Amino acid sequence: MADQHEHETHPTQPPIYQIRVAGHLGRHWAGVFDGLDIRREENGETLLTGPVVDQAALHGVLRRIRDTGMTLLSVQRVAARRSHQSDGKACNE
Image (cartoon, rainbow, N blue to C red):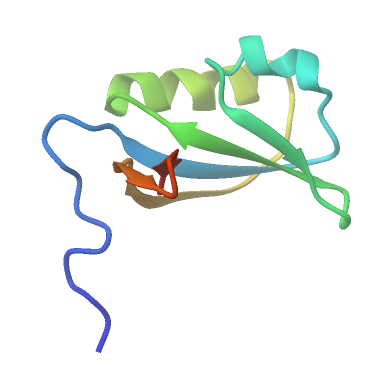
């Protein structure tokens, strides 16, 4: 059985979202999307991933997608950001 707490948000850490849009975006869009990681998928879509501090910030990202005429495909909250040390490297899940 899956851990029920897997997607719970720690009170001090913002949740991580994955936002999928149609088409490929260049890395220069990262500043427009508050530093979200931009990954171009082989299927022609772009995946924006990263922490979003609150619902107002999420709506701001979605508004930018709408205002630029991009096609929004999906929005998914994937996890809370957790930092820990593993083999001397910081890790965010």
